Amino acid sequence: MSSEKDEVRSSDGARRGVEWQPELEGNETRPSNYTILNSILHKLSAVTEEETISYHNIDVETARDVIQELERTNEGRSLRLSYNSRLQELKLVLMSSPIHDSHQPWLNHRIIHWMLEGLLLPQQAEDDLRVLSGTRFSSFEAPYASSHKEPDQCIRPKGLDLPTLVVESGWSESRSVLHNDRDLWLIGGSRVVQAVMVLKWSKTEHGRVEGDVELFDLDASGSVRSLQKEIIFPRPPPMIAAMQSVNITRSQLFGPTLPDGQDPGTIFPLSVDSLRVIAEDFIRDEGFVPA
Image (cartoon, rainbow, N blue to C red; front, side, top):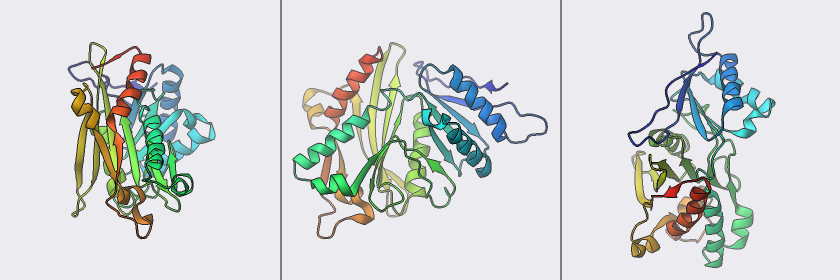
């Protein structure tokens, strides 16, 4: 039987995810694919709400075998899977919550607004840009070669092996775990991935939900940098809230497929107030209130 480390919680009592360390059998020095699969199936049979579990010290071959077996048995459809080869970590998000996924209708709605505002041609939105959720990508470069990642959402221009814009959201995941995902995308996909948006949702002990969104890219030296950060909840004063937006450039949206003659610096705004409205509905549906 597997043993579970205590759930990592902050002083406010918010869930931060679980590091699941299966018991090793016999002479195992690393958990085998059989041991990990048993652990995952055990967790799937008991999970009742979103939970993030991580397995450490997992080599590339074991991770590949586990992922393939989960896909073969269709268990992978109920998970968000990722394998970080640099950290040798296999991570799974079980029962992704509506709060976790509140960015999905937001981004879809904003793309429609970009077309209505003339920033994006309908043909580009329909034919050239693919909006995807949970699609597995594997075309990463060193030091993340052999990694696998399923983004919470992304935009991938037609013809590319990786997305240009990635959204990673965390409800049961800690900020540091989300930043590991961010680094995998930006550094491992540096020739294609232009920007990563990280949303972090946190529940206080009084059932109030806080949230923020931060946009990252790589600077000229190849180091990760923060471009902007916006608070979702607690809600800022109305005048500030109405002006908040996460600003994506045309260059970040299209990456190496940027159409000739189009201004790479054109701003595609993502209204934070629009996200706030959507997220509040999901938060209240889950029995919580915005901070």
